[in-house]
Image (cartoon, rainbow, N blue to C red; front, side, top):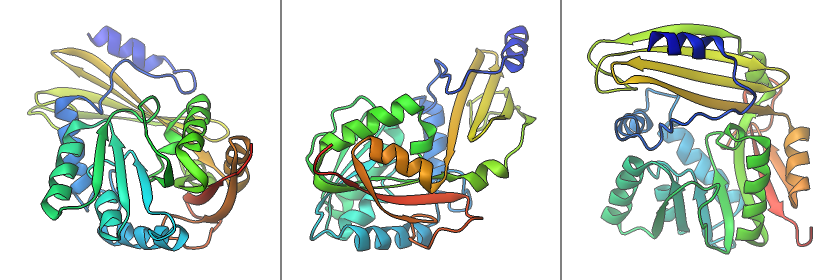
Length: 281
């Protein structure tokens, strides 16, 4: 097993190379992800409650529930945005691959009697339904996709949105890439932790792919064998994000530094955009 770990550690994946191991659906890891999403002290999984509520207020200002009543939340997780959007009067459809997060989201919306429908599936190939007046893709999920996947998703959303419907999303900005660096570190757990319920060691690597792509890679070794997880991040500036949007039939309406709507800044590590479906392509 160690030989395989060493072989994988010395292999630099091709850009956007995927692994067979999908931790979003792993029963143990998906439960750990849910805990991380609900832990406000952990900024790597979800934003703070204050940030999310400010984001929902900005979304309302860009596409109110009066003019854009039906909204699609892509990668909705445990419903942190979806429940708040429903409280504001939106009819919400959320889609996510994690059964643990969706179970939590459903329990919250049902307890409040909120108008939210949840779909378990991968938004890259699931039936999204529609037409929607707006779509949301939060926490920089868009940049985790390969160029082909992003193109395919924008094409799908173009069909799912009604004429002049809006897509609101955020991505990591160039400043995020400029502050990243190649590194490796080991984590060891004798009693189980995030990656497994039993003992394991994990090699965590961050690898830069100039000019704007980052790979966060996790190689997990346990008595059950070796598993590898690749998490990709593409960083954008306003021009590159707008180019992708226009090519897919969207107009770039406005940009912000993040989903709270603050003005773009050169030092900001994120970038948010409001994109509008063009009437013709």
